[in-house]
Length: 77
Image 1 (cartoon, rainbow, N blue to C red):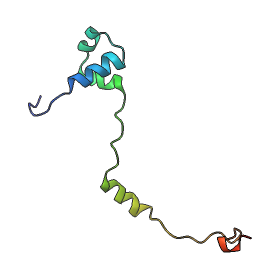
Image 2 (image 1 turned 90 degrees about the vertical axis):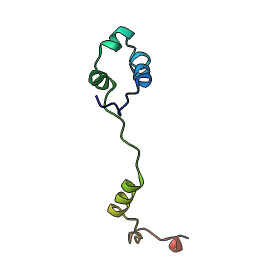
Image 3 (image 1 turned 120 degrees about the horizontal axis):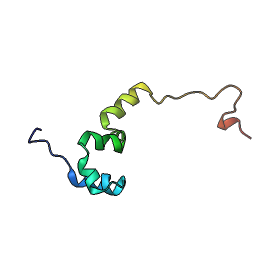
Image 4 (image 1 turned 30 degrees about the vertical axis):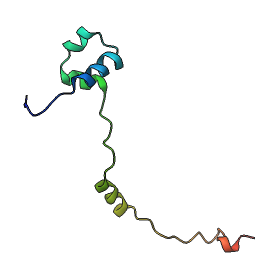
């Protein structure tokens, strides 16, 4: 394992022991890959500025006219 990569053991222990209800010996018998599998898929990353910009380009806000069968504000009595 790369020495510059750290593993957040306190968080993993809370997730495994408190969150999943594993006994300590069962927790320590798991590999990190098995623990990740038990915890389920990771949550999606929060949206960043780049992703927001992509969405804004794909779905621009545009001014649209109301449908002909729907009155505009000036036509409402």
